[in-house]
Amino acid sequence: MKFLPWVSLFFSILWASTVAAIPSRTTDKRASSPFVSTSGPGFVVNGSSLKYIGTNAYWLPTLNTNEDIWNTLGNISALGIKVIRLWAFNDVDTIPVNGTWFQLIKDGTVSVNDGPNGLQKLDTVIQMAEQRGLYVILSLTNNWYPFVNSTNSTTSGTNNSSIRNYLSNNYGGMDLYVRQFGLQNHDQFYTNSSILTSFMNYTTQVVSRYVNSPSVFSYELANDPRCNSTLPASPTCTTETITTWHATVAAHIRSIDPNHLISSGVGGYLCTDCPKLYPLTPAPAPPATSPAPGKKKRSQAKPVTREQILREQSERRRRNREAAKRAGTLVEDGVRIRGRWVSTATKRQQTSTTGTLYDGSYGVDSQDISNIPDIGFSSFQLFPDQQSYGPDDPNVAPWQSVEQNGAQWITTQAQSASAVGKPSVLTGFGLVTQTNAPSFVPFNSTVAPFADADPNPTSYGVTSQEQADTYTSWLDTGIAAGLNGIVQYQWGQSDLTAEPGTTVTPSTTTSESPTPSSPGEAPTPQETTGESPNDGYSITGSTTVQQILGSASQSIAAD
Ligand SMILES: *[C@@H]1O[C@H](CO)[C@@H](O)[C@H](O)[C@H]1NC(C)=O
Ligand SMILES: *[C@@H]1O[C@H](CO)[C@@H](O)[C@H](O)[C@H]1NC(C)=O
Ligand SMILES: *[C@@H]1O[C@H](CO)[C@@H](O)[C@H](O)[C@H]1NC(C)=O
Ligand SMILES: *[C@@H]1O[C@H](CO)[C@@H](O)[C@H](O)[C@H]1NC(C)=O
Ligand SMILES: *[C@@H]1O[C@H](CO)[C@@H](O)[C@H](O)[C@H]1NC(C)=O
Ligand SMILES: *[C@@H]1O[C@H](CO)[C@@H](O)[C@H](O)[C@H]1NC(C)=O
Ligand SMILES: *[C@@H]1O[C@H](CO)[C@@H](O)[C@H](O)[C@H]1NC(C)=O
Ligand SMILES: *[C@@H]1O[C@H](CO)[C@@H](O)[C@H](O)[C@H]1NC(C)=O
Ligand SMILES: *[C@@H]1O[C@H](CO)[C@@H](O)[C@H](O)[C@H]1NC(C)=O
Ligand SMILES: *[C@@H]1O[C@H](CO)[C@@H](O)[C@H](O)[C@H]1NC(C)=O
Ligand SMILES: *[C@@H]1O[C@H](CO)[C@@H](O)[C@H](O)[C@H]1NC(C)=O
Image 1 (cartoon, rainbow, N blue to C red):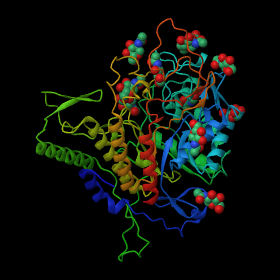
Image 2 (tube, helix red, strand yellow):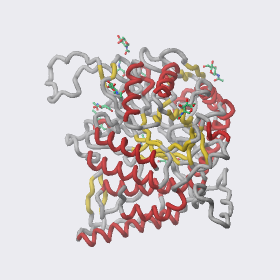
Image 3 (cartoon, protein in one colour):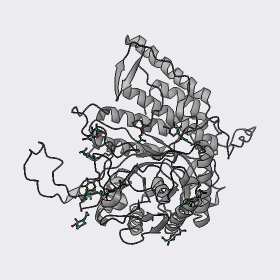
Image 4 (cartoon, helix red, strand yellow):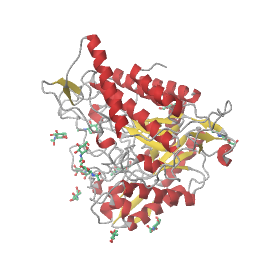
């Protein structure tokens, strides 16, 4: 493996504390079980440790044929990928004519669809995953649900009417509950007892189907839970609101299912200075003698602090400046505009705060959530097109700033998980390429902002080579920092069966058409096959990324 020099520096600090964890197999009763469990900072299944590369495919249960599901799982598994993260929710306020849906939420009442176009589709995915030797992370609801008018099953209020279930944020979720229960604030999802009862009812019905299924890796409580969504937060929403909700729902799941891990699904935001509901207990004093060979114990890392983040940022900035000075390319300052670097004469203020990643602004304290006893592992996400992970550095290319900030986020998260003494999983990471830019829809939106707004198709996004370099760096960084799972966002599959009113619809124009059809031209015949949904991160046809994931699967398994 090769690392950038500054990355190696982080590792030398973290290496001793976060890597080379060997689970003590004899002490854990569940260690020889076929269900994935944890032993200290590692995952264990059938008595062996498990580290993995995964991918996201939220749309898997919405595919139109079992053969499509089977082939998709086969293509994923062929790369050595072990885990697929997907949506185990699909809420509607109006029953759609065609397509898959799991739960009707309407005027304060809920009902679950366990028919063939309902939870039975999820059953199929899970059975086939087991046959393919794959695990699934089942996410139970979503923070993100933009304004959707589902009277005719398409989104409205935008100039881009994607089909229902096409976008990852169009599967119902928290804001749908809030609206259908006649409430106004996003965080009432976490606190209103009627909603909580309904959500736990749904959770019961999903979880009780899979209690004995070894292919469930974990139940993830929600995708990216936080105080805000497209509905605003109430002023009373704090990190304690969201931590308490996690503890309540996790305890509920644990009461139904003793076999499976439960995880959060948060973006990973920390609050270094917030009060804790689940304070860390100080690590026990190290033994006086060194442990026996093969019984090497990992000493717990210290919790992440603001001072540390700032020190690491300024240290990295200094190294980049020195490298630029040596190369004769030193730049004082500039700004990044839509992914492109623009130098400016005005010197901007040096960042002297850690920003929203570490101050609890989103109502998330990932360390406190990870330390809830029923939460099995620490999790986080990395989406630089939707969240800044640190200041831009004028002395490296913009994509390199993104890469370096992302790598620092990864090592910081590994440290935070280690402080809690649990495994750490990156449950979603992705970078939008120029090719994918026209399809990119941010999670709080239904509009692809670069779809038709700009005549220049390369005005947003990284090149495929920059994406490949960044993914390689993040995977290397994550493996070296001791992450137990790294899950790319998102899989892409072609040659799927198309049907009207579903995620894979017959198109009237061929997307591969080299020339745009001229006005007045008769529509080409309907396609009977199509591609899986793409909200900006799909890797359909990207053999480079597939190879990177395949080789990372080998590295992490050998780690
Ligand atoms: C665990 O052991 C069971 C029973 O021997 C077996 O069916 C299953 O495939 C094993 N799972 C893994 C991941 O090795
Ligand atoms: C991959 O998917 C294609 C259909 O797109 C299918 O023909 C092929 O058998 C799949 N490969 C595996 C290994 O399952
Ligand atoms: C729980 O779910 C069942 C089945 O969908 C439904 O009939 C019932 O009304 C729900 N109960 C509550 C309290 O939401
Ligand atoms: C939703 O769409 C329908 C039909 O397009 C329209 O009649 C209705 O007013 C819309 N609802 C909202 C809340 O915009
Ligand atoms: C569905 O709603 C969208 C947005 O309001 C509208 O443009 C479209 O024509 C409607 N489709 C049908 C079939 O009513
Ligand atoms: C919860 O929501 C219901 C409406 O569905 C409302 O009647 C009730 O007052 C709310 N409870 C609280 C504590 O706000
Ligand atoms: C979505 O998020 C972006 C980035 O945080 C923000 O600028 C924008 O205002 C948000 N839009 C909505 C509709 O919440
Ligand atoms: C909600 O979002 C707004 C705007 O992004 C932000 O100023 C505020 O701090 C957020 N509040 C919470 C509780 O997350
Ligand atoms: C709408 O979005 C889809 C995918 O997000 C994209 O493929 C399509 O080009 C967009 N259409 C328009 C008219 O913006
Ligand atoms: C479509 O959306 C884009 C980006 O949100 C916007 O710039 C453009 O003006 C919109 N076009 C129409 C016709 O509304
Ligand atoms: C539902 O599917 C049928 C059969 O494929 C099709 O004829 C019909 O147009 C579809 N309806 C909608 C609203 O997509």
